[in-house]
Figure 1 (cartoon, rainbow, N blue to C red):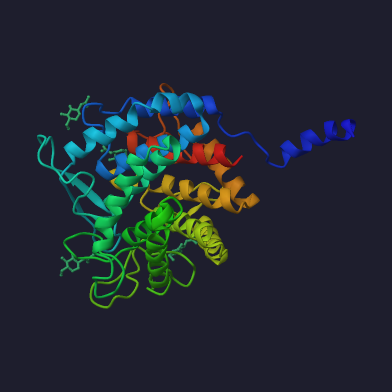
Figure 2 (cartoon, rainbow, N blue to C red):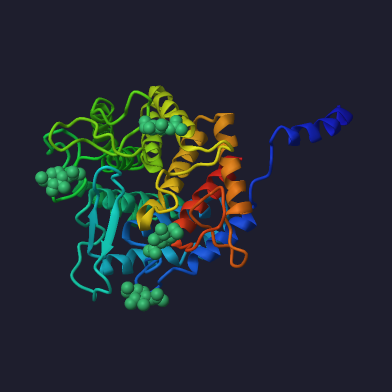
Length: 378
Ligand SMILES: *[C@@H]1O[C@H](CO)[C@@H](O)[C@H](O)[C@H]1NC(C)=O
Ligand SMILES: *[C@@H]1O[C@H](CO)[C@@H](O)[C@H](O)[C@H]1NC(C)=O
Ligand SMILES: *[C@@H]1O[C@H](CO)[C@@H](O)[C@H](O)[C@H]1NC(C)=O
Ligand SMILES: *[C@@H]1O[C@H](CO)[C@@H](O)[C@H](O)[C@H]1NC(C)=O
């Protein structure tokens, strides 16, 4: 038996059971991300923006879950961001326009501290990102203060649920657009909270189920199981907007958490159809993920792909498939080999390489999502 396994080893390697970047390498990437952390305001600004900072925090918590060194280093980040970021709360204007529907944030510049609304702002998707970040921090710390923050953010989103002429949730409080991201985040936050909020489980589960029942028939999921950007203002039909990677991602986390909360696996079955369609549609011939905006994804689009990887991790941990392990491994390895700066372990926009400038907290956190997902599901 021993001799057999000795000979089996090289062929296993040849079959693609390649190592992914190590825990130490993930930690180096984390150190680089923290080079952009603005301690006094608790955000990764000016390197990236408001909602993108929530995604930076999420990937740190996710890495801390599997890496004790990072867990120790991250202990100071959570309370600092929790208290300083909500004082600062960037006043943000975002636009999105046909035909691409690539979101663009404009920050208000160096605003003085002012009376703020905590982690709430004018955009329901931004609120959803922060709710998910605090849930991730709660998961790794067990500190219920963070869970309560997520729950209170969700309450603000829930107040607007069902008030659009198309159903679902508005993108922003200006009530101009019903899109996929805000609705997927509403589903995802509700389903995450259902699995964490004890006595209030049925309250959150109800919202998650309602949102999904609406979303799946809203027309946003097209006949190829790909999710377009949103609904046409006038007709409430699929607007044919770009198939962004993050819109194929957030829904996977929501559906997995729904299966977890209900024991009904039909949600993950649908999730896998969406994940497979996305991998088919958005990868190159080497299996590396791209967004259609590359190389000009702006400050927001540069973070989309990591969101897909992070949510594929959630799906993969619940109901593993070898093809998803392969996808995460390939992308993680490609980033480390071809998309990394020669000095300082900065990770940039195009995961197949080459390294393009600038790398920043947006591209770094996004690439780290894949490293973490590959490590966590190995
Ligand atoms: C932190 O953010 C504030 C507000 O935008 C800015 O004035 C300051 O220069 C930033 N600090 C660093 C180290 O970038
Ligand atoms: C939808 O209509 C509103 C009001 O007419 C307009 O301001 C907004 O830009 C439109 N949104 C999109 C995404 O086309
Ligand atoms: C991906 O999907 C879009 C929209 O459905 C389609 O236009 C495009 O041709 C597809 N690309 C690939 C490579 O499948
Ligand atoms: C971060 O880098 C991306 C990709 O190079 C770039 O598109 C984006 O504008 C940068 N963000 C900021 C805030 O400069």
